[in-house]
Image (cartoon, rainbow, N blue to C red; front, side, top):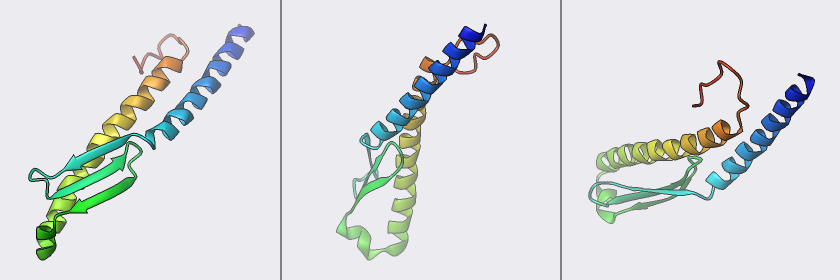
Amino acid sequence: MFGDMMNMMGKLKETQKKVEETKKRLDTVLIDEASNDNKLKITLTANRTIKSIEIDDTLLEDKEQLEDYLILTLNKALENATKVNEAELAAVAKEGMPNIPGMDMFK
């Protein structure tokens, strides 16, 4: 039994390391999002760090319209980045979880 516990602890440490590596890798995964008419384009990482924002000159003439575009497009980009982030981290966590009866929440 003690050997099983040591094996599980080793597996958990290995999984923790893989999660950290995955988080670093997600800094290089870029998510591109654009408004429906492509007047606003946003790029962010899967860790939800904004990398670039491109704004069409016509949007600079109307502050309220630009604000609306930013809110809508940023929210879509953040939602997509969050999906990628959660899926990647969940896959690593599921892969590294020891088989403990009754603890099948990641399956």
